[in-house]
Image (cartoon, rainbow, N blue to C red):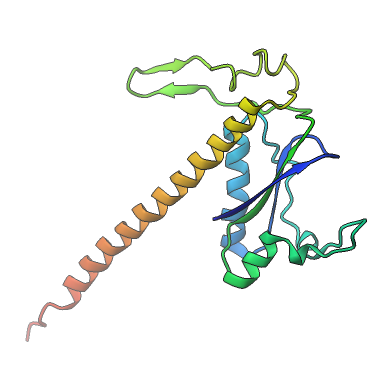
Length: 178
């Protein structure tokens, strides 16, 4: 996974740009943005873009193509599917996500929200947020947690595939009965 972090002066919210990919890779690509929005009050999935036009668009002012952006360049050079540019507004967010309650499986109860994940806390005043270092830290925490879950899933699935392959190999090397 490659992530390029940017500050955005003219748009509100935190959102991302991803590359336009083919089939299953695009589903995984979009899923990362959806999971971010499900785990952070401040990440806006609806403002994110995975359009092919966005990979070659020319920026106004400097007239440089986005093909020179690190997200697109890394993808083209390495075929790494999960390359993102995450844009966080300097102003804050105009809309907050609804997060599912945190359920503690060990204690079998719903945990109370902390000030960063409670949309009615002092940070948000019920409707929007002016970003603070704590809010940026919370968004960074969500990105890292999702990255490590993804890494764990890859390792876990790879180990399952090896087990299935070994079982398949053992079945195929038995001598045939005559």
